Amino acid sequence: FLLSLEGASPVIDEISNLYAYHRLGVRSIVLTWNHRNFVGDGVDSHYGLTDFGKDFVREMEKLCMLVDVSHLNVNGFDDVVSVANKPFMASHSNAYAVHPHRRNLNDDQIKEIIARGGFIGINFYSLFLGEGEDNEQLIMKFIQHIEHFLKIGAENVLGFGADWDGMEKSPFSDVRDYHFVEKLFREQLTLSEEQINKIMYKNLVDYTLKILE
Image (cartoon, rainbow, N blue to C red; front, side, top):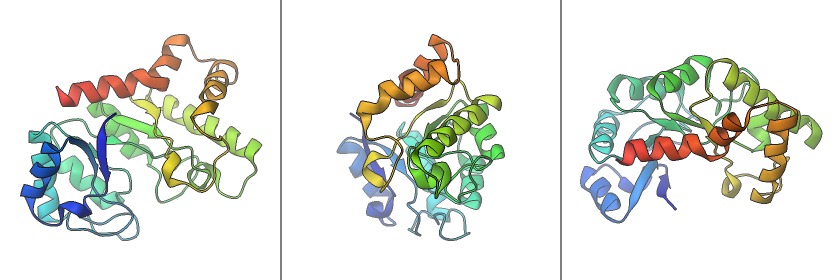
C-alpha cells in the first residue's frame, strides 16, 4: 500500500505540513481535486498553480514524493511542467481525444508525461470513458482509450487508475473484473504478454520505485 492524499487541501498553505504528512508515511499527493486550494486550481476553474503551489511541487520532489496532476486544469498542468524536474503522474485520467471531458488529458499532456517517463492511470469511471452510453458501449470506449494511449506511445507509462472509491458508475464491477480486462487486452487489442504485464502492474511499479528511490 502507498499512502496518498487526493488534493493538497490538508496542507493548507504551510510547507511544514507537507513534511509532517511525509513523516506520517504519505508518499503521493494529487495537487488539487476539482476545486481551488492553496496549491492551485482544479478543473472547475482556469487559473494555474500559485507561487506556493510551485514551491510545493519542488519540495515534493526533494522528498521523493509522487506528484499527481489528475484533476488539474491545463494551466496548472503547464505550471507543473515548468517547475518539475522529475517524472510526474496522472494517476486516474483518460484521453480527451476519445472522450472530451475536462478531467481527461489532451494529447500534448499525454506526450509530456511519456517524454518524462511518468505514469498515466486509465480511469474506469463511466463519466470519463464515454458518458451516457450503455455498458457494452462503455467497454468499447475503454478499449478505444487504451488504443489511443498506445497509438501515441504510452506503452511504458500506462496502467490502471480505476478510481473505485470515487465513482458512481462503471462498466466494470470492481477489481474482480481485472481478469476480464486482461482478456480484453489479449483478445480485443491483441496485446503481447509483455504489454499486458506493463499495463496491469509493471509500469506503475517501475515508476513508483524510480521516484521513491
